[in-house]
Image (cartoon, rainbow, N blue to C red):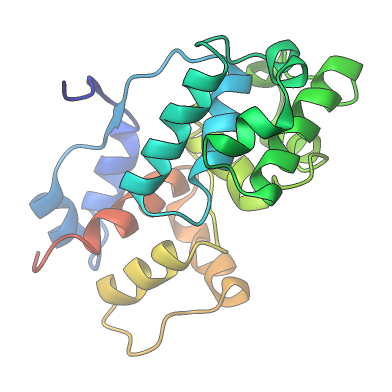
Length: 207
């Protein structure tokens, strides 16, 4: 069954649509739509860890086995109760298993408070999440964009965003993360929309 989608960041689409370089791509790609999700924060972050540095199909398989190993109870308490060998058998690498268990441990101890992330400024959300081994700034930014729907996230370290930006602007070489930072200022407060179109541009032949 296809995921249900919802339209987001309509203001970003309008802003990017008026940009001389992004405009034709926006017209070709259309509305910004993201999968509807109501998953709990721990579930979402554990899934993100499962998906890190893996192709979609392989990541989905491992994540599915991970959820099965927990009998559908994807919570910090259950992760810490289940034997590591059981989770490894689901296909988790040592690093991913360590990251998920560290996330569970720090949530349980209160070191990482996730109950009110939606009420916190983006900088605070990132500060908390990167306390977990295996969750870096990029994963935290993806949480902000795709779970919290924050409209002004600019993931400059994302290779796909940099490549998409280069394609939009006809650049032979993609900008570095440092170079891309100030280039996003023109799209504030809708930099998430700009990043989303950069992703989609890589899947689109011509505007």
